[in-house]
Length: 239
Image (cartoon, rainbow, N blue to C red; front, side, top):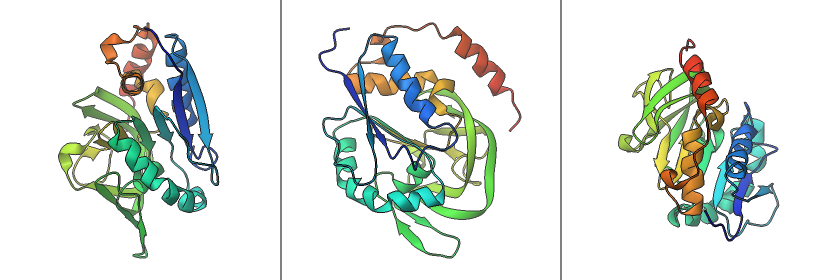
């Protein structure tokens, strides 16, 4: 596979938005590219930095309320750029808090409404209970996915067919419709922490393939038998 330039991976707000092992997703992406001989350039974007340019892949993790407040203004500045990247087909992975912030709005328990970026056709309402535990979903794109969720916000999709998958065990987006996550163009939003990609390398490979304009079948095969064994054990864990 001939590569002219490195894959430019934008890691948005790593200091404020990297909870529950989210940085592991970035490490997984970089390693799975390295093992295939694909060069990767990691660009960390922090509040106040200039807009990243010529990006091939975007990642943003989850964060506590305090972290989300720190990045609020910078994220609004990024909004038009992110929308352009989505429209151009750039792949991205948004975890938990990032997933919520890229929706239409977040309604707090007091009834205040915080505007989101509006990339995902979804909205989030603060819940009274935390939804915590191991989770397993069935995705039409990726098959069985496993992870760990820990969130109080409940997200509702305006179009259920956009869900990343349907919950087999756990909670997912909310306590009512059994959906989990969302897929818009090549952007994925999800509550699966853990981190997600080392547990589900096919999702990492899908993102990489989109970033370099290939299909997964065109990527060099990696011997993932130990990951398969770990996934089998994790799938049997109680919720």
